[in-house]
Image (cartoon, rainbow, N blue to C red; front, side, top):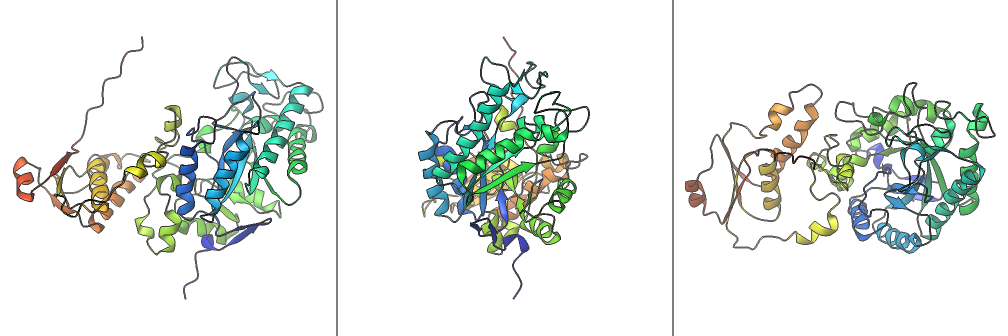
Length: 451
């Protein structure tokens, strides 16, 4: 019998039993706009059904001085946590909350950001407030009470965020900490706030609750943080963060997790087998395909929809208001769109799809998956459309992965493909089409002038 891939082996994290080593790390969605609403729960539940062992909720604000895309500074979140936990546990997935304060990178409306020192925030241009003793105490209490709410809400653990150049790392780094009091100067004093937060959280949740910390390399000289490294785009190789993870794993006997553009269970298994980490974050990969683990377990890894690391939907979506995904239209809209998915009637007429680029291929895939007969016409001699040109650009080869996947899927689902043939009304009559979808390219709408 062939042994299971290393990433699919069970693991115990404290008193939490995980069904495998695959984790979805914390990532902003803004689906709840600060609250844990049904849209956000449905988004996570789709991934729970897909076989993930552990999900970490998006970075959660612990104090009103820094609202985030999810906030936990009052007890109103506790019943929502219970609803989330109940539904995720029913599918075998465990859930942690990531607790955070952005410091320089975030602030309440009409207020200045809080940080270690009075530096100018790179995102807002506002000069930060150098936190005084009372503000430090309030943030420490905020972390502790947020951790307590996670436990009372039935979650399985919490993760304190001390990376990505956010508040706790701003205190740790001499680049951002210019203080000369008990929280600045030498390394021991710069470390004091983080240590206080961890001790306060442990006191709030008890010794039998999982408490973790997200850490990363110190910010490089010349920058407060490296945002392009946090969510590496398609030019980064798979596992691009492994070099930074190795010394952290070597320095501790505690379980460790690594993330950084890891796309497949095979890649995750290689990381686990190498000893670089015990758990592997596959976050964008699960935005692209919530069923990644389940498909792999079923021997259908070639059916996994690939993440192309374009960052246009997951990261760019936040700039437009909420998470999405370029290759998965359902991502972030599970509650809304899954209810509309209906199988075709037995006598439904065929559908003609004109165009074999990503839009036409996706239309054909969805229709065929719902039982419709589909005939796809492509004027070129191959499928892929403009993506076939785009993938030739330097560092953009990955953009073609989704076109390759779509081409495989439509063939697997039995779509009839006619290459080198531009669709015409005569073709629609020939196949007895009841509907037609025209997906032959579009011209971007002109940008309206700012008034």
